[in-house]
Length: 224
Image (cartoon, rainbow, N blue to C red; front, side, top):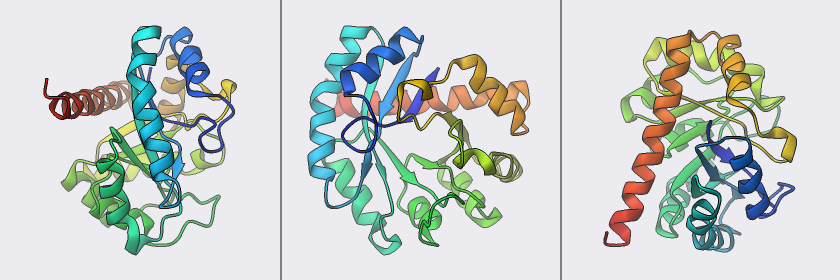
């Protein structure tokens, strides 16, 4: 399982990064990104701390740990600046908290995130065909989520992504120990959203590609 959307105590998660990543390692994860909720009030608090520990935790537990952020309820006109600041601070994976139907996310958030070139648009709710086309054109992954509530629109997201050629990934949006999801359950959720076996495997390849890209960017920053 590659999971590129999780939360620690740096936002509203229950676990410190060490325990979150240890539990993921024991659950058989190959890679995990810690993507705590952020806006302009806390980006500089969260991202540098995760950058400082992610690599060491990955080495300790024997799998890949990435430092990320989930830009959450950022006003759409401010999204591009937020994405740029997150990357400047070292975020390896930039997720945007999309227009889920179970929260009052500002209209226009999905489009602003896509135009700002985030890596993943999380739980994008009733995303439009035009937005899915934009995701396809920019190579931005749309999320199928295992999280209750946000997952109510998985089928809609999957259908439009497949119709418009947008890449999909499957993430857990974990906030608590019980949220970490085995690969077998992630597969069932993907199939339940309307994906075929091959399309599910493609989501896994998409996640792997994001991990490789993130590690490549980090290697360049470190001069390797």
